Length: 515
Image (cartoon, rainbow, N blue to C red; front, side, top):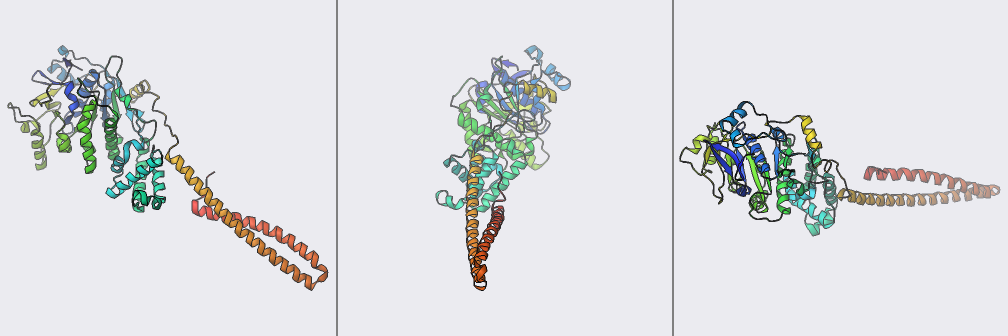
């Protein structure tokens, strides 16, 4: 990507380059605009620029169009015309491929992206399951009890088993952890079942993403561009938002402080950002605001891509210093208010009225304001966004497959690992309880069997004595025969009845035991 004095050349205003200061790019940014106004091309242009400066990028690809970055562009039509109009060939514009690593939660369009249940934590899981305040409190207790008992929560079956364990032993935990209601346990279990049906179980497990793998560069020093396939993921918007929030919070928790640097260590670019904030509880928004505010000191820049700046909460919007505003539509009074609000976020330019220009921008055109070297916003400019140097549009399935197979991370995450965790340990616990219950049931059956056999023996002896009195000559023979018959018969009947009673009891209580 073109750069002047190691600054990102992003747009051109009447022949003047609009440059993004790398040292200020960790002050975060916003790319906004209605559908079809050029946000995706802007996203690709900025990602290529960061990569060229040696800054790795992690971005979400909602439509699949960004995959073309791994191939050199072959511009034609409007892209070729824009290159000529902006005089880019003379400025050193060269079509080239960029180092790309594909990721996919479902493992089909990239390396599997995974995280453990524990790494998301109870707050994000409550958001993911759409739990109310009471149910969210129970979720926090489940995680706390798992920690106290040394039970690892790695995948969904671990969390499901842990939830069952807490629900069945709620009276035991009541004194130490507080009241645990069956209704809340049931709501959590239903939510976990829904997640499994949506395919979320693919995301939870091991090997989990190692944050260090996001900081790779190629042999030419260009930053790796990590592209998360989000076309299928968008069908489950809560999972999509939870993944982005997990990545942001995980980086915040694990990266050391680095202070101000000449460029970011990593840039995150989240498309369809409104899903992150939509219906998010206040406690989550407060946490997100804190993370966005402080993560820049760890060398990470965050860029939200959305249709309207109003999609972003004001407390977070105020921290997004670098702005690219594509056209907005004003068909309703509400739209007009949104346009006015967006215009007021820019430093005015006396050459035009920002509010009027926003609605008349053409495709690929935008209002641009970046932070200067001192961190102050520059005056807004009406500009054309530079076209990417990589291919605009998606690659073929074969080209994507080849890129995945030749990736530096090929084979590292492809095979799932299921080590001993809460599910296996609790399964052994439940199996022990079942074995003890079966042994107790067998003991009761054997006790009843012994009593029944003793009763039959007494009856047989009584009958033998009666026969002996009535037939003195046959007494000894009848008594001996009766005893043998009784012993044999009662032993057989006792064993058969005992087995059937045992199966009946255990089958009813436990639904049978797998061997």
